[in-house]
Length: 307
Image 1: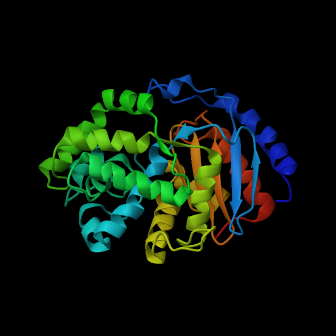
Image 2: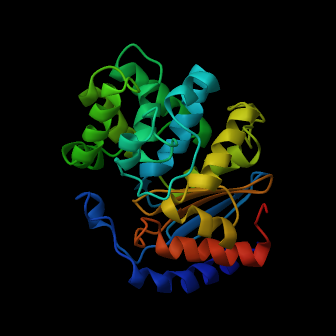
């Protein structure tokens, strides 16, 4: 990648695919987004960056936050504790499916990137109450982005809290099977705030650079996440990060990535780049349709694939 202008040309080319997608209007607050938006920041591990589109526009992380809460909980609890309650296997089912919880023995979520698994992970964040758990999570995210202003979008969090009936069902099912503990409404409150954490492409790409550097801050050189935990998170991103399109994405792009239904994509090119993308028009799997095309173009042109 040589210049912002070069990146802008790719964005214009990929943006044409937005017309084939639609914004996530089943969460009312997300339905207000402009489906034609497409923006990107590529943050290099040497602390320089490229950007194109309205890269400073804020959006909510949604499922991208699952990677960050997993990293925190693995640091809090350790692998043995976490993976007693959440599995490590990909699934071909939709991200909000309850089916495998009913049929698997023991009845635990298949992985931390589906909603059931992410709820179980969020339930494991350490803290004496909801306030302390939230504070620990948001301070961790702020440290990764090097931005103390990051917070959550109250309108989106409220919208998700009021419509989170399926997630409540997942929680009660898991509570029955001793996967989660405590008050379900408090967990839904924390989880919807987590999903509504708001940032721009630059912030997200900067977090990606931490993962690209195996847990080191690209600016200070400080270790923010242990290397083995970064490795676990990146592996889940490869196998489960793009919902039930993860296999196709691994073939076409071939880097660890996680999408969210706001249209965000968080991608990591190990030892090279962190990437943050925002394109709210989604395909039928729930991934940014133009964002995927943009990553595919970049991967082909600059040999991103880790395989």
